[in-house]
Image 1 (tube, rainbow, N blue to C red):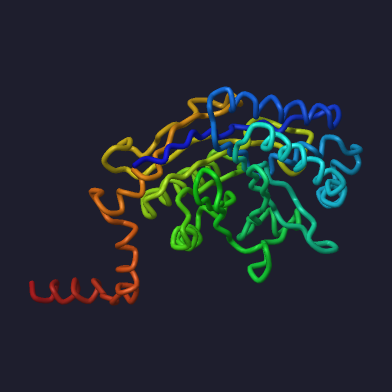
Image 2 (cartoon, one colour; image 1 turned 90 degrees about the vertical axis):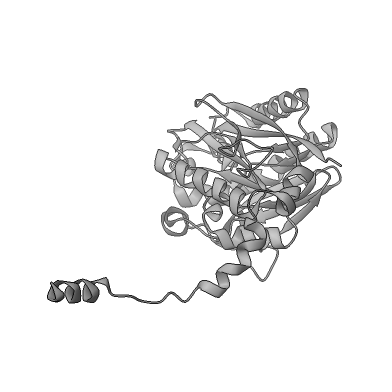
Length: 311
């Protein structure tokens, strides 16, 4: 038995747009390219929706706080654009996230997951220093629709860990325990260090949870934007490092910073089978950690001093 899905994960530039029609044309071009390659699941990055800020008046665009409110006038049309493409092509798509007002003066980082006839969203759970500080973006509310979710889609049960969220293993574990078969990690990082934090954590989640992880970053410069001016990342699909999969766990990863899709074919049943017959049993052995979380404290200084006296 196999459940094969064809994945397209974007290395996506934040472009300066002349008007909304240019955004719509860009979205159509990107989706059509992925569909031409046979993709069933398309993953776009965190804060890719910030390119819409280029349509704002310069004094609003250049103000970190003013842009949040002004973007709300564009948000529904942007999601409607992605949703129309999903309906036209019959694919499942994680749209680029953007700041989303949920109450007066309160904004979350929201990514919409779209499938034919269906739409729902994932809010980022843990905010970076920049988000919770200068920018003023709040985490999703765990007592409302802002909590972590598992999405039942035509391509399988998906969980979404937005950028920094991927660096917290208990979030991934909660999704997998709730039935997620595949983890999506959209990201936006402005340094090589930030990119590698997300990259290595995405790979760690693939190993410890025995799932595939799809990473989609923004890339390139958008120096007109005070929020996402520099973007560093490589789109990739990661798997467990186990039999039948690449020894380094890298199914595909971009070699340079050229914008575009990375494509891969995933067999979800073959990945799930690793939990029963793989070389290691990380997913099931997770529970053993709980028995070993009270480390004993040992002083080597005392032992060394005693040994010296005996000499």
